[in-house]
Image 1 (cartoon, rainbow, N blue to C red):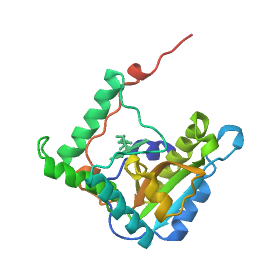
Image 2: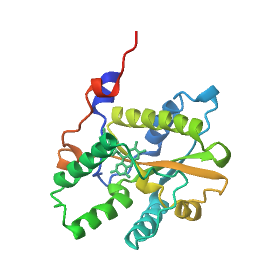
Image 3: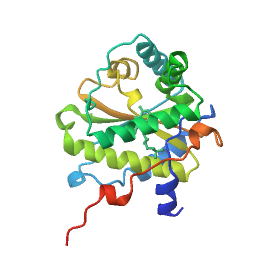
Image 4: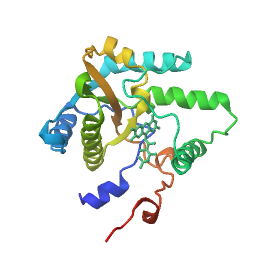
Length: 221
Ligand SMILES: Cc1cc2nc3c(=O)[nH]c(=O)nc-3n(C[C@H](O)[C@H](O)[C@H](O)COP(=O)(O)O)c2cc1C
């Protein structure tokens, strides 16, 4: 597949089929994804592939904490304030997702159900958790994780799979520590939901937006 095609048409998938993804296919994707660049070729990532009963157990516990209103305690702290333009983009995609699902802004029940769905990975049959040793879970390690995550998502797209990078998988890392036995020495940086996308469903098909190039680039000669 053409790189440009993959880069432009990969999108976050928020409705998955229940079909399992063959382990051999996940292996093939990861074996290619590890060719992502990393600082000094350190390849600091540890990728935990979670499927089957363990994933179901994780989803249940993750959803419960979200529904109970538990305070998130991610290993990677999320920003709470943004410059206005950036915040606007965040709000815009949130609105697009909810509109595509016909969820009215004031409909608390439907929103809660959507968030539950997000915390159960939109039905995806596989989750990949990207971890770093706590000692290096800082900026440079994050750059490396970003590189391999996008590489994974592009490869998944090429294979007809869908993915969604999901903060919602790492808000309560204690669950992954308990259920998936990720040791305390590892920081759980980010997770992705992986599976076969439901095609032609509005939440997987709405028009996505990007800021014009002029807004995000500056040329100096
Ligand atoms: C670090 C990171 C965390 C994300 N977390 C979530 C999430 O918790 N829920 C969600 O629906 N999408 C999440 N996304 C997906 C973004 O919303 C999505 O990438 C963005 O809106 C651009 O859309 P696209 O991926 O379809 O091009 C996340 C993306 C990144 C890079």
